[in-house]
Amino acid sequence: MLQARPDKYLETAVQTATPSKLLIMLYDGAIRFCRQGIKCLEDKDYSGASRSLFKAQSIINEFRGSLDSQYEISQELHRIYEYFNYRLIQGNIKRDAIQVEEVLNHLIQLKEVWIEAAKSPAKETVSGTHG
Image 1 (cartoon, rainbow, N blue to C red):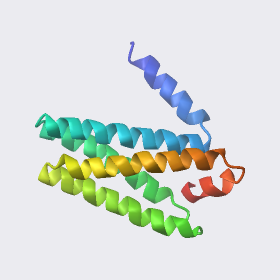
Image 2: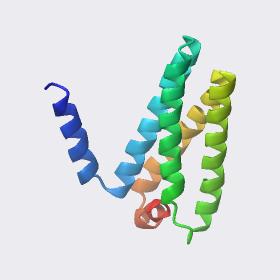
Image 3: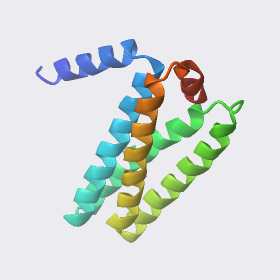
Image 4: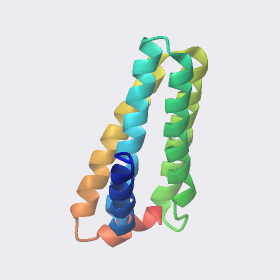
């Protein structure tokens, strides 16, 4: 029964989030799963690493699927997200945390960019690239 409360809280947070906030929440999830994957790789928990990295890939695939192609930046983001998935797959197959760390660092940087973009007066245009 204790598990139901966080799930309900998360459900409410997602349902009431602005597009920018939702995007940042997804970045938080991808970052968290990359960190878990790295930890599992370091601990030689390869099935745990696979699960975590697959979850990170799923979020990145959501990013790719939500890009609005009418914006030029969407093409660049698509290539970046494709590269992230490739590195996560390679990191998982080769059991190489360095490849996952590279993606993690990029995700952290991109999250910061989106946080700043969400603050700008033109945030509707920026958030439109993922909508």
